[in-house]
Image (cartoon, rainbow, N blue to C red; front, side):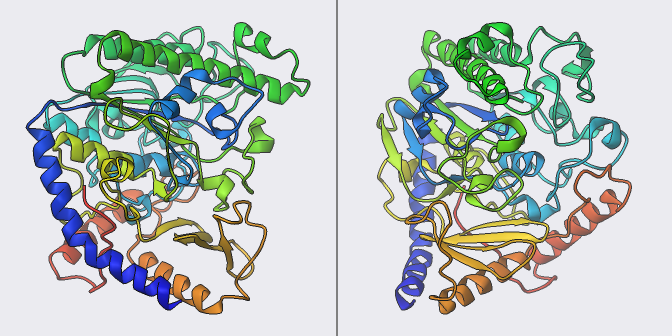
Length: 486
């Protein structure tokens, strides 16, 4: 265990030098052409569903091409076990538990007129990029607050086309699926399209073509492959050989998602912007295998858990001419690194002195300029369950029972509990998690709650005051986590 502690000390000692090198790289980048940034987010996608992840029954050539033309992250994680928390972290570059966004809010009908949403005290990557001269757009699912003050165009996005809630029917006038709310263009309700997945791909491609020659940030957040399973007839017909009806419908929906991604990639390519455009692809959480027919092989667990199947996701990045094609990166990374990378390359601000950023710029790591691990530790908390990963080891605590320790490199399916064999490591990781947990806020609302109890606005204000007091040295003397620079 001494070796593990020495490695951690060495990583900390190198942080200052690494920060200086990254800042120098940022200065060089800001003097050149600022790259476009596209972040594509799938919803409830299984870890093993895509071709580049070993999937066999559903061809996904367009999504696969992102990994083939760039880098595939084998150990790519998200910060949440469900939709909205991950999205809050993805927009801020901060663990969402720091500001109380730990659970999914209620539906649009529950949250309208309430204080439930991404706290207004938090700045977003869209805010920073817009100030840096970028045109910003969000196409697809929002799920970060339905009251007007929480909507995309109040959180840094110039354009918005999509829906505000956590789920939505794919076809208009669906009498069998409740919820979803209207489709919006900006703040105006518009007619629902024939199929949402295709419409989101078309809208995103049009934005890319329209903004060529001007730096842009596009966050394309599909609701596919989230329930309800409503593929169009063309895509469903491709999978007549799949006998399980749920898996067949899921396959049709995934195939439609791949075609929509292909529309966007084609727009980037045909507008001559491939070498000046970063394209990220992730899912917001693991697949709910019984719920939608997804496949998390070879991982254990599902959406909603801190098992690998709930938090490890397909994760790829393309930047032609900068990232070598066909690269594979095996160190742990997390969704927080996406906004941190975007901010670093654009010379934009992310976070603030009283709002530490937890993500890191991935480019020096995937291009081989920085050989050390991007993060000393990664953390998760979702109510009574939590986890920490450090190096090869992951300590996991579920709602009941004692903590379990796994080597998730040798045992990716988390089958062999090593806690009895390594009690000192359990103690070390437990202490590290406890230190992180002390920095966090209480949840602003309970899972699925409309926000009237507890009072989300009052809690958000208390968190804001505490953050500012800590930054000024007037609050608790807990150390701030500094896992990287933006």
